[in-house]
Each structure stands twice: as C-alpha cells, then as structure tokens.
Image 1 (tube, helix red, strand yellow):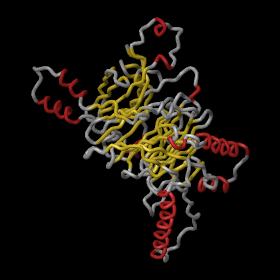
Image 2 (cartoon, rainbow, N blue to C red):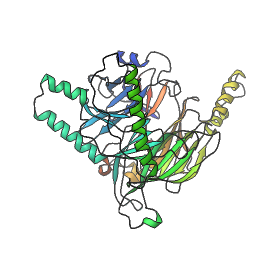
Image 3 (cartoon, one colour):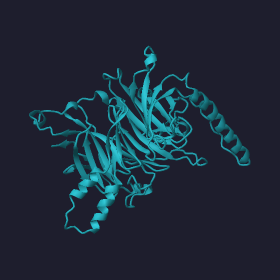
Image 4 (tube, helix red, strand yellow):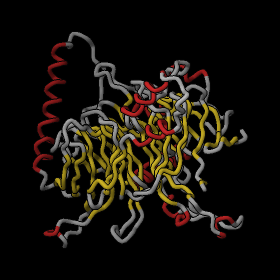
Length: 486
C-alpha cells in the first residue's frame, strides 16, 4: 500500500476487516480510550494485536494479504479469568505476543497461535506489561533490557536475556523434530510451564494499591551499602492514595519482612479457599489439574518518597526511552512531568490547549459554539494518553538539509505527544521546558499507539527514532506522526 501524507500525518495502512466486529468495530468510538471498553492494543513494526476479554486478534497492517491470527487462551471460567494486558516481545529473529490475565498468569504465544510459555507471576490482575531497555551511561554502568509486570501493589521484573534463551530453545525444538498429534495437543495445553522463567518480584503497596508502575532503571545503592555487589532498581508507582511513589528495589530477598509474611499467608489463604470450594462442589466431577505453582517470595523494596494530594489520583504513566522522565496523567485533567532521578515534578500541563481553541474563535461565530469551547476549557487533559517521541525540530542547517546526511540520535530532540480525546486534539511538546511544536485535530474514535521496544535495538545503526502512531477506529486507518518539523 502506498503511503499518503496529510501535512503532519502519513497514512501507512488500514486494519478494517470483518474480524474486528467481535471487538466492537462498527460502533462509533469503539476504540476511544474513554469508551469504557476492554479493548487492548499493542503495536509492532508490521502488526497490530487487538484483544478483548477472551480473544487476541493479530492483524498485519503493512500487508493487507497477510493472514490474520486469532488466539483464544485457555482461561478459567470458574474464576471469570480474562485478558487484562498484551504486549509484543520482539527479538532479532523471534516475535511473540505476551498476554497477562486477571489471575496473574503470564502467557506467551507464537504468531501461529501456539502456546509457548505459561507461568503465574502472583495472585492478582496483571495491569500492564512493559518492555524496555536502557543504555550504559554516566549514571548507569551497565545496559539493561527487561519485561516489567505491573499488578496492584506488586511489580515484577523478567530479564530480557532469560526470555530470549527460553524462546530460542522452544523454536529450535519445534523446528528440529516433527510433532505428532498428541505432542501438539500437549504443547497447546501446557506450554512451557515446567521451565519457569527466573524473575524478581517486589511489594510496593506501602502507600496503597497502585494502578500503574514502571521500573525506571538501575540506581546507586544506599549510602551504607556502597560495597554491595547486588543491583538496585528505581520504581515509580501511581495510584489513588499516593499520586506518585518511588521505591528502591533490591535483588536481596532475605531481608524483606513483608515478602516473607505475604509469601507464607497468601498461598495458605488461596489453598483454604480452594479446599472449601471443593467441599461445596464435590458432588460434581472435577477435572484433574496440575498443582498450584509455588509463588516466589518478595525481595526488599525501600520507600524513597511519595506525593499525596487528595483528591488527585494517578491514572497512567509512560516513560521516556532513557527512563529519566515519566509523564503521569491524573484525575484532575493534568499531566505531570517527573524527573525520575531527582524525583521532582519539573512541569505540569493543565488547560493550555483549550486556550488555542478560544484564540481561533471568531466574534461573528454563533454563541452556541461557545458552550463547547468552555466545556473543552474545563476538561483539561482528562483521559489523556501520552507517549514520548523524537522529532527533527528546526533542523535547517546545511548538514540536516543535505540529502547525504542520515540523521543520528543527536539530530533529534525528545518530545511528548499528548492525545486529549475529549478535545479531539494531539499536541507535541518539546522536552523538558520547550514550547508546543505541533497540534493536530483528530477524530473522536482515535487511539495513540507506539511500537513496543525491540530487544537488541540499543546498538542499532542507523539510528531509529522513537515514533508515535494514530489509529482511527472508525475508518481503520493507521498513520504515523511525521518526525520532520520546521
């Protein structure tokens, strides 16, 4: 499909198909972030994964002839288990889809729909799956790539190298022998659940249950433990009780009192509930199932700071590529820019974009239009979605204008794209304190997306900038925000 450019957007492809009817397509605004639906999206360089409570649909947006794949995970109907998070895991020659469930299971599927891995992380709903990598710099002496699993009051970390090794083994075994019908069935039912992936898990529930969280990177050890050889991470959480909280996460599991208590109490509690349920329903035949997985004990999480500002509540969090900045949306329609190293809010967006609408209003316009303008003014950035992106802003020097010059990382500047669905606008602001460089009107049923981090891309050459895409749910059109701006 040929690309068509409309000023600040370039159309890439269309995902419209009959299979999307199962996800609500055909209804106006079915994909809108404020529609109250359970539709989840995950974007890759060539594919889009869309999920509802029980089904994941994989669509190739760059090639309309690419076959679509439906994945129906085996979920527990008794516990009303559902899909609550999806994300791509992309390596050099391997691409799989990761699924988080309301019971705390992490599932990995191939693009053919084969179950590769199934593992319980912890009892509770998986809210978010985050994939990211950080380069070695002055503050961080080693590079790191990981998958972060966010749950209410709990955060877990899987190392990217462990996931890569497991996936490589699975694909090598799959391609090295012919599977008979029984083997295929066993693989589909059980996956690779016997080979548990190592991971670390922390309880970050000190200031109440979190609704989103992220591991921002590796941080120095406490002053009294400079000689320690273990690694420490910084985690930022947001929630209802504390808008922002920060923790130092240790790899040490021996000194976590909360972890010891919860790791002992929770399994016993769930075991008691399960036994009581069996007593009630023992008249019905129950299928034989594998014993409950043993949960990993919590490592130590030390509180660094927290911000409580009732009635403000944290809602969504997004990280910059380096992890040094975090954009946080709250319940008051504002966006906070947090320096994750200094743990200080360095910028706040309120209702500035609504004044742009007021400035464009003509006195001759009917007064009925004023009500919608003032409505937008007081909405602020409610239900906003944010993504960091990189743009070539005011790069009009000879080197940038040369057709032989390939832009490198130093040619781009970091920006924040803000989608305010209630106002139908996308704004792009230059970091950290720069001006607004772009504003785009968009339809109500749009969603802002960003391709997942690709493992091993820290050393990519030439440099691939961070981009943001816009998916119009009503038309099915996928576009990318142009990164060239004068």
